[in-house]
Length: 430
Picture (spheres, rainbow, N blue to C red):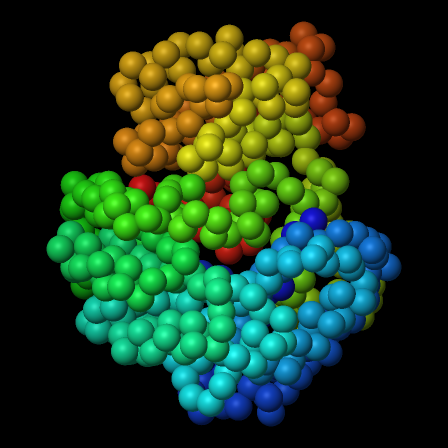
C-alpha cells in the first residue's frame, strides 16, 4: 500500500494551482497558526481511524504533497511518521518523499533536520529558472533559491533529490526551456519531472490566457519542447520512464510508479483520495468539513465501487503513460478477452503511424505517440467501452451489483479529468 499525506498550506497560491490549499500569508509562523495546529491534531486522529481499519498493512512509500509540505517543521513531520509507523508497517528503506518549495529550505539546517525526521527523498518545486516566468506563475521564490536549495539538500546528505519543472509556459520559447534544462542538469538532481502546463479552470493563469493577457507558445513549439527536452535529458543520463518523468538509473519515484502499476493507496488529509480493494473515496476539499467527518467517524462512507470497465480503462490509461507500457496479458487476466483482437484495427493504425511499439508482450507509446497520448487513450476508451457493452449484454462480462452500463464517453471524460484520483500525478496535455 502507498500512503499520501496532503498538507493543505502554502504561503500564497500559485496562479496555475487547482489543488486544495489554505494560503497562510507571508510572515505567518506555521507553528503558531491555529489552522496548522488543528490540521496536525486531526491528522493524528485520522491516522488512528484508518489504523483501526487497515492497521498493520505494509506500506511501500509515503508522500507528503500539498500545498507546501515543507512549511511544516521537521519536528512535526517526524511526529507524523512516528504515528504512521505505530499503525502501519513501513517496509525497510521505504521511500519517504517531501515536496518542498526552494525558499522554504533557506537558512539553518532545515534540510538536514528533515533527513533526521525520516524524509529520504526531496522533491523541490523549481518549475522554472526564469525570473519573469516565476513571476507569471506566482511562485514565491527566486531562481537563486532553487540553486541554493539543491545545494543545501545535497550537503545535508540527501541521496535522492528530485526537481519539478514546467514547460509550455506563457511567453516561453524553446530556447528558454532547453536552457532551463541545461541549467538544472548542472545541479545534478537524481530525478526530473517535466510537466506541460495544464490550464486549470478557474485559476488566474487560465483567465489571463482566456482574456488574451498572456499567450501560450504555439503548439509546434510545445511539441519541440517535449521532444527535444526528452532527448536532451536522456543524453545526460536521465531515462524517461513515464511521459513527464526522467530519472538516473535506480532513482525512479517508487511512489508514483505504484500509482501507475495500480497499487492500493491511502490518502490522508483534506481532499485526499484513497483506492483500496477496488473501492474509492475522497475526503472533503475543506479543512473544517474534513475535521468534522473524522470526529464523527464518517470518513470513507461515500464509496465508489470500481467496476470492471473502470478498472480496465484505468489500467490502460496508467500503464500506457509509462515507457514500459501495457502488459497485453494483463488485459486478458482482468477481462478474459484478447486485447489484440478487441483493438485490432486501432492497434494496426497506431503501429503503422509509428505511435506504438509492441515487444515482449508489452504495448508502449513511442515518443511521438506520447505527444498525442490523450487522443490515443480516447480512441482506446471508446473501443473498450463498446467491447464491454456488447460483452455485458451477451453475458460475457458480469456487471458489479448496482453497476450500470456506462457510456464510454462519460467514463472516459471522468477518468481523464479526475486528477485527484491519483495523488499529485499530473496529466499534462502533451
